[in-house]
Image (cartoon, rainbow, N blue to C red; front, side, top):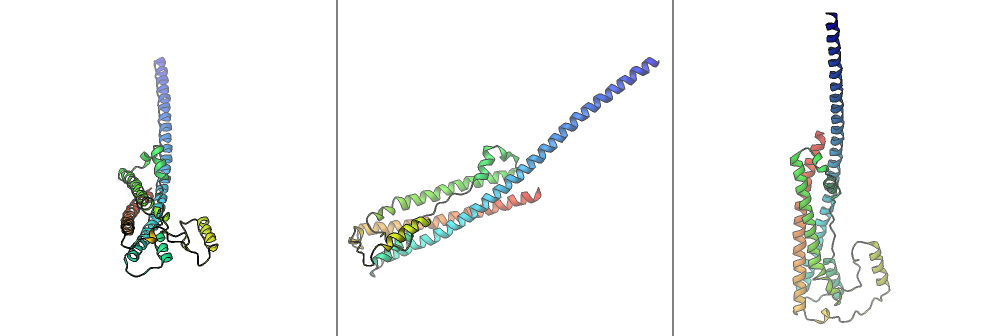
Length: 258
């Protein structure tokens, strides 16, 4: 009887030891899963913060573009009105008007956060499926918008307008610098200072034509279309701004819930 009790105690002890081992393993798994969960939650928060940063940077850039498009599109319509008027015009002033109407602004919307989410597979860390889908849709729309804005600039400025520089329509001497780089502006000012006030630009091709010529008609048409395109681009930019603000509000709500 004593031997049987001893053997029963041994089995109880072994079962207890086995149970402790199983519990220890389960506890280790639980701690590991808990730690991984904390890391993923931290990564999700950091990713959402970066997305919010990019969204606000895009809003700033698109707002600047919308203002630019409004301004340059208006300059284009002013140039068309001057070119269509029966009143005599000052050649230098008209040249300045046309140059202001042919300025351009590059749009490069921030997408670093989204690119990182996709390339590293971290997009799955965003637990809210609706928010995740909204992020994907926004960046797809933003990429399309950026391509459209750039293509419009290239189509109507590079192909239709800038060729007119070579014909002398847009005169080099001007107080409106090209682009936004100080080096360019400094070069323009330096060249301008070396030209005498009574410098004769010569007749040049466009200026020797009558206002009702086919060439001037094409110029007016090109400026009109370019202005209309800029105004459409402005509306498109405003739509993307609204999408970005809506998405950023959702991202911030998700961050507050973390």
